[in-house]
Amino acid sequence: MPADKIILSLCAEGTDTVFALSAGKMLAACAEQKRPIDPLYALLPKIREDAEAAELTQYRPDIVLVPQGTALARVEGLAGVGAEVIAVGGGALSAVYGNIREIGRAIGRAAEAEKVVTKAEYGFSRLEESLAGVGPVRTAFFGEKEPYGMAGGMGLVQELLRRNKLENIYGDADREIVRADLSTLRLSDVQLILLPDSPQEFTDEDAIRLGNYTEHALTVFVPGELFRGGASVMRLPAFFEALNEKIRRFSSDNLADRDKPTYF
Image 1 (tube, rainbow, N blue to C red):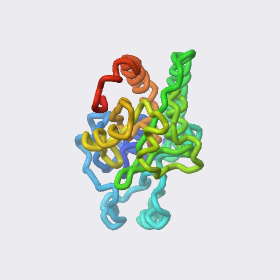
Image 2: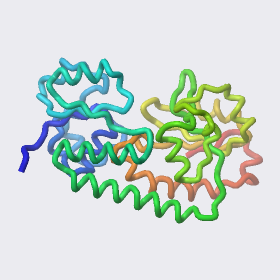
Image 3: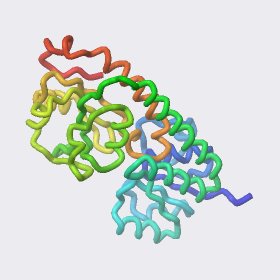
Image 4: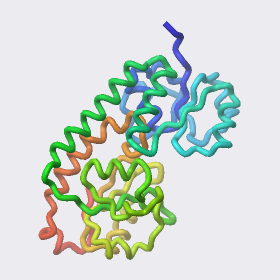
């Protein structure tokens, strides 16, 4: 049996993936995260997501997991510590699944990776069955702030919204992030605004400000790591099911009298 690898995870989705592959004992350190899924997380040394390569040499890592989209210069700098650098994420679910398998092979957990992929896809297939006959909900997913940026038609978020019959009002844009005037929210008659809590954290102040540009849209804070790839997507179908149950409680009729956005 191959020796265990020493893994450093610089992103929550990377840490979740290692735990999902039953390889938590290989983690030497990880980045802080809001919703750890394994008790071992509390015992691990914490490292900043932007930690310099020199700070990582003390761990003598074999593998460093970084967020998808990490700049090439940074990847090359981290590789300089003699570790394999793997970006965690993907622009589509198929790419996310391939990424999970890649990590599984790299750490000797290929069978576990296949189980994670199978479980995730089974969850999405059941979700789609539950939505048969349900109409789409016009949705805006905000991925950035200062300035605000919304998910466009390219990238993982677009596919994840589509799998849950959430119609991205910026889905026709051929880019991943759209920077449009907020007045377009009202013009698009948006019904649902999703605000993730990572990598940038949206607040009540953001919810109220954005709500002023809508006609009583429902505003919901969502776990950001679920939309960034890695094994975290395995938990997304169950989250969507809970979200859908709450969405259906709010019809256009009972939102019509509200002068502020509703969120939970």
